[in-house]
Image 1: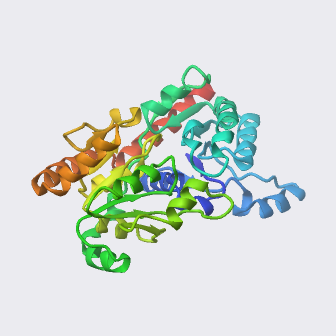
Image 2: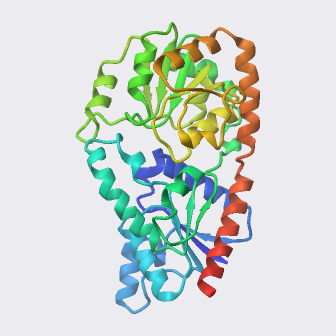
Length: 352
């Protein structure tokens, strides 16, 4: 079976959760007997495809199943082509609309119409994949196609050896023990205000690893914190080797307000980090408070949880060990099985 695993504007999304999720998919599919294409266009680019189309060869490559990981014009073109040619179409709901609010400037205004557009796009598919029950339930009842849950997974091999980078990472960013860290794009949705305000009340270094925008696209909240952070907060920016980020921290703090899954949490857990999470619905299905993480709902609860972990090495070790076991349940083998089953299901739906 020839499968199109498509992510348009892949290069700009390399530093995003969607980009990481698609990387996991492709690594997972490498171990299957499926033939994977990453571009729908003949010759690999829309320019070469347009040239071929002009001479009568058609613009689209040949594939048996189309799997779209985004929802832009390229994906719409793939969806239309799939419909016209009876090709099974799988849409991946990495975004559901509401998690877009609190990301970029004006993103909160864009979120409602984006949500309506996403429901239209996902409704055109034969099968929709979602990374969590939380995301799936937000779509069921609003779109006709069936929605199946498949984890974004965690690439443990990519994280191997992170411990050896600890001294260099701390020296590079001027961090001293103890260190509270997080990984991801610097958004208000991800909890940057909570992160910085907690840092003001806790005697530890805080480090946020991930890209941020202080230009026209960046929100005023992000600009304010990045330009004038508390004295013990470091905004490290993007690091090419994510192991650098996980090597630096002693406690992983993720005060995000909304997620469809949260790959960075799984990565931190795979590295055996004790994790402090905001108690939001999506995390209920994956993690258990007091077993493999600590969950908090208020600023005082976050502060108490972090200070408790910083002062209790045995608790850090116990939660970290349990976190590794949880992350192991989301290996790329599970992603491969889920995708293979999804492609077969979408094919049956079209044939019926």
